[in-house]
Length: 120
Image (cartoon, rainbow, N blue to C red):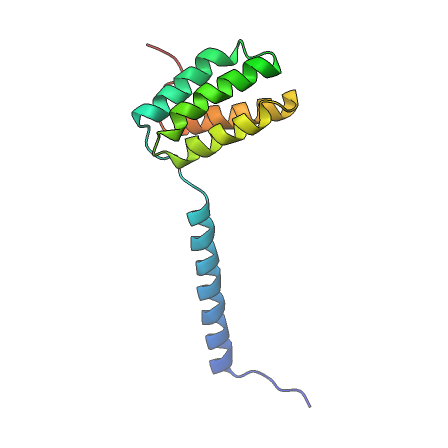
C-alpha cells in the first residue's frame, strides 16, 4: 500500500529542509574566517614575510622566516593571518611545492586584510 504525502506534509518537509540548509550555510561561514582587520602585528608579519620571502631559498632560511612571521602573527587578532602563518611554519621544512602554496595563501590573507602590496 502506497502512502502519498499531502500538501501539509510537503510544506512542512520543505520548511524543515530550508531550516537545515540555512543552518549548514551559517555553520560553514562561521568556520571560515574572513579577512579580518590588519592590526599592527599582522602588518608586521606580512611585511616581514614579503621582505624575507625572496631569500628563503633553503629549508633553513624558510624555517627562520616562518619563525619570525609566526612571532608577529601570534600577537595579532587576525585569525586568518595567524592560521596561514602556522601553515607556512609547518611547510617550511617540507617540499618547495607545499611552501609555495602556503606562502601564496599567506600573502593572499595579508592582501585580503588590506595589507599594501607595494610601498608608495
